[in-house]
Image 1 (cartoon, rainbow, N blue to C red):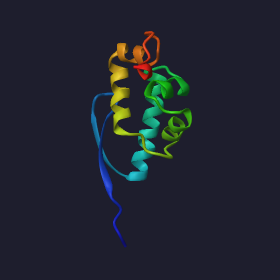
Image 2 (image 1 turned 135 degrees about the vertical axis):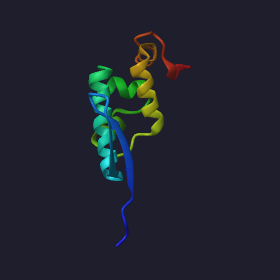
Image 3 (image 1 turned 90 degrees about the vertical axis):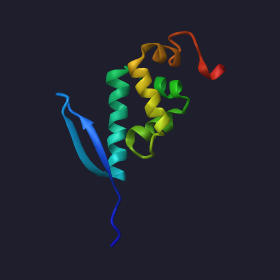
Length: 104
């Protein structure tokens, strides 16, 4: 029987403690999907449509990422982190700053 590949995942809990676990690719994709939804709603306060427009994908693609059907590209994870940490980036990408990067 072939061994399934696992990935080492490090998370930080609410108290700042590092949690290390191993996940299969499928488990990791589900974890990333739930994290995407949490960041979108709790940290950014955006609807699916607003976030899809901000990162330049269609709504169906974002929904597939949030449901764990397809993997979200690493570049989008980086962009979400920037939006979370730098409100000016979020404002520009969501057109609240009257700047549309797609037109550039």
